[in-house]
Length: 307
Image (tube, rainbow, N blue to C red):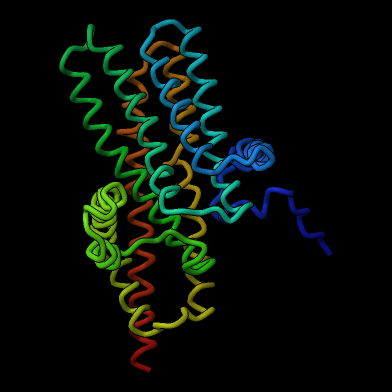
């Protein structure tokens, strides 16, 4: 009889082993856990750690403007350091139970600010030789980058929803978000209201790209308003699990490895080409498979309701 894998000390600080990536599990999570322990001893909040990570990541992006490989390598090390903090803040929040709406806002801004800085740095670096064309390439890539990250995050949270329930997932519903949005005034809470305004649009975009999933969720909510049955949760996890590797590859590590390679050979434009070709192909495949899976569940749920 095979022994169960020995649990690591940081396992309890993870969202789910289903949604973890190879490099994260062997590098960022163990180191992030140790940072989280240190921050906890120092009495630092997860939000403070997130802000530190934001500034370190922005500093990393600025380094990529320069054609000096030495400065680029400093930027790479800073970006790795920033991502350690991005791991540590979530682990610290789960370790201490210190979760907040502000933390959700900051965590959402973190990666966006890093990559906006990286994009601007590469544009400014290449503009003297590329001219207007680098703007076209960068803005086109940026649009698809946003779509890749948004759908990867959405599918990951959908998986967590059926694996761990509402408490273990950040799967959002634009209609519910809008109801909450209308309960407060701009005068009462301007910053949170502004974030919610943009987040509603972001969520609507995710929903517009996943019609079969939306139909499946509507049937689930109507048929099982209190609790999703275990048979469906198990079936969804089994079919969704193979797609989690694509959500991870569309997130941070894969794209950053390619970014670093492109900087080492002094061809940062290759990073944009990689996002437009390889990652977009991966995105199309992931969406096709997920929507096909959800269409099958819609059919199955409809047949069950007619029995």
